[in-house]
Length: 458
Ligand code: GUN
Ligand code: FE
Image (tube, rainbow, N blue to C red):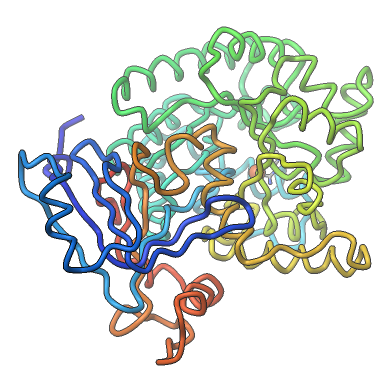
């Protein structure tokens, strides 16, 4: 890959309103924040309560002085937030998103998804689609995505290359599936599937040895799609590569759970199944997690698994189910948000946040107040720091701190960049402006997107 001019970064500084999560409940809003980013994309200075008159002096002292420094002064209605993390995303479904309304999961897979994913046998189709997919997610401020590819190794390599080229931080997985899907959309054997996975992993490792922004992820689609030999082999790969994350679908829908129990009758629940194959670890991202027995909740808590909460697809193709998000937070599980594009019709984390509010409210009503709805702060956390932790990146990204990498969005809510956001009025303070953006804004308000200091908005 060639190094583009955009890679030749200088030091950058931002002064003004900086907003981020410091815990699930707490958002920190720095109205006079100063943040300096080094040429390597790491935050070298992060200060609060800095007067404008002090900015030049502090930057002169803390910048390396080696090259030039660009300083961005944020005005009223403009602020920085951490980039959004999408913990569950099917890249090939970018082009089928929104279709197949009214179908339940297994029918939706057979009738809509498998015929569509089969198209990724064609590398040029994959390149065109994945290019549009990565651009589309970056435009919406998704600086990190955990992607399922299709079953095709070559297409999935193209996806990983495009993430690296376009600058999106990503976990990318060749999807493993060798049973219960039509022949035209299936790995031909467990051995084939495992060989393609090993080849994919070494390819991606060679692509990104230094940058460490694109990593392979072990991706058994779900137990229904994988036979025992395949799950055994994937668990072995997971054990041999302790740095690699793992992702799968977990307790997503009633028809899925029933079929899993029929196929894998030796296990009485999905936690035991995946644990048996060494796939239920602290590196595992479990999508959906809707119907968990108490025992399974304990298992994922003890093992430190991450939960990808996908409120849009949970209320469409999963039937209409509100995952017990309050219980996850109460237990201190690692939880983030997933668009689940395209089972979820939207590719926007802002939409996922809004749907997370709605379904958590539905659950509050259904439990007569026992499971309190999500707060704005909690939902913002899920979309940023919570998601980063789920992806194993909590020490690198998700909020701002000296030494962390600068993955951020510059949000504009006023003037020519306002889009259709609820108009900001004179009396609105920063809290209100943030709430207006989160509840009514869209990609037009996301002016700039940075990953590891690089400006990447398509
Ligand atoms: N379970 C197995 N495959 C899929 C998929 O593509 N999307 C969703 N939402 N669930 C799945
Ligand atoms: Fe999914």
